[in-house]
Image 1 (cartoon, rainbow, N blue to C red):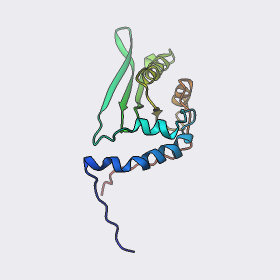
Image 2 (cartoon, rainbow, N blue to C red):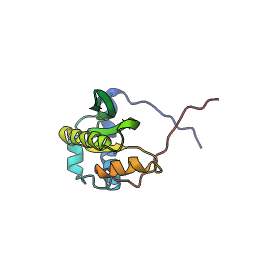
Image 3 (tube, rainbow, N blue to C red):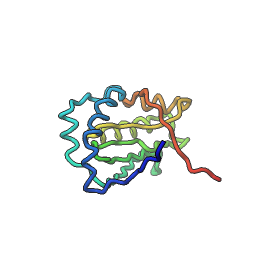
Image 4 (cartoon, one colour):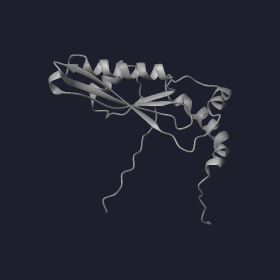
Length: 157
C-alpha cells in the first residue's frame, strides 16, 4: 500500500471540511442523550465559518463558609467552531465542608452558566467508582452517554 500524504489545511481552506462536519454532527448527536437534535440546516447555520483557532474561557465559582473557600467549580467554555461547549473541569469541596450542599450549589451554578451562555454541549468527566461525584452530576442533569473516551499520555520512555 502506498504511503498516504497528510497535509495541514491553511486557514483559508478550513471551509473545505464544512460538509463533513455537518455530516459528523448529524450522525453523532443522537449519542448525546437529551441533547437537542438539530436539523442539517440548523447545523449548517451554526457553521458559517470554521475558525483557524479558538480560545477558551475559564470561569471559577466558589462557595465560602466562615470566611474561607469551602469549595470551587472550574468551568471551561470554548467554541471549536461547532457551537459553544462547556466542561465542568474540576469540582472540589474541602473535607470540613462536605455534606452541606456546597458541591450541589457549585455544579448547579455551572449548569446555569451553560444555559445563560447558550452552551450546545456540556460535559463532565469522572470515574465510575466515584459514586458521590456521579450522584452529584446526575442530580444536576448530566447523563451518561454511550461514548468511549480514550486518552493519550506521553510515554516516559
